[in-house]
Image (cartoon, rainbow, N blue to C red; front, side, top):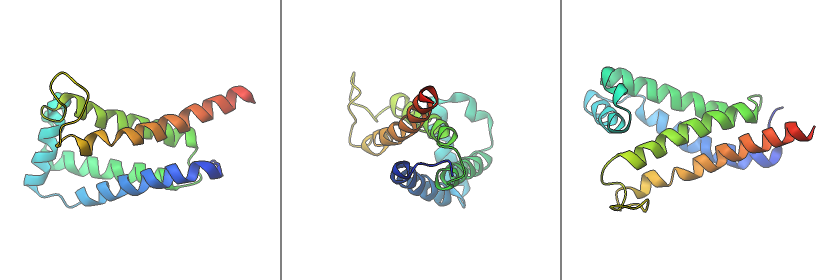
Length: 140
């Protein structure tokens, strides 16, 4: 087993939220897919070259795989944490780049941005897993 018992609460909490998000996008219709892609391309313009339904399908599958990896005790915490950190950083990139989510000239969220800025906890869990595993390796 590659998960220490004290890592389970963070991994399980993050997995629950990410799996729910991925499963919710699994059957996205064309309009929903276009909305997801539109928001994503504001921060990451290269995503605009994809078909919106393909984008939504890949996003859904990616979230499901990440959620499952966080749940699986045989997935090393360093790997799960690195994947979670990258995912959370991309979500926070949306928060920083999408207009209307932050108060003018500030990192403080607007009412519309509160849901996105809460993804900061995912970054904290991911970084915590990575840092612990790297420090543990240095200690051994």
